[in-house]
Amino acid sequence: MNITLYGAASDRIDRAYIEGVEALGRAMAKRGHTMVFGAGSTGLMGAAARGMAAEGGKIIGVTPHFMHDLEPIFAHCTEIIHTDTMAQRKDIMEEKADAFIITPGGIGTFDEFFQILTLKVLGRHDKPIILYNINSFWDNMISVIGTDLIKGFISTKTADCFCICETPDSVFNEIEKSNG
Image (cartoon, helix red, strand yellow):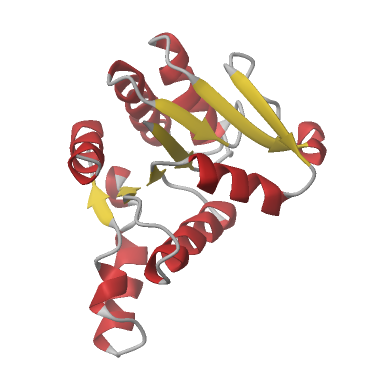
């Protein structure tokens, strides 16, 4: 199964996040899944890719040409897809995905999460979406979504469109259960 992974490109983050996502990458490869990601070699994208590569996993990187000057590409991608824009990058990553894992990240990761969540709510896909909640990173986001639900800004349908997992095993058990 192709699993699109979104996450931070920053290397300024706590090692616990790096190690947790590298373990996620190793687990993904061991289970025979292919990772589709933004092709970066730094931050959590790089950590997931290193974990995948260490276990011989298939890695598909998707990157706009202009990003090459901003972010080094992971050298051991099985396949690299070059795009002209970030929108094309996101479209390809969404199309290739059988499931999505959102690791901790910043505004780019938030954008990717809310785009695929919105598309699922609108019935444009029915693929599993997992928030990988390392060190309670997503707790504040979950609280905001809970507040929106309580105040009527979103429906329970929206809140039911994603799962929260804290370990690699729980992530893949949820994805594999959903894709039966």
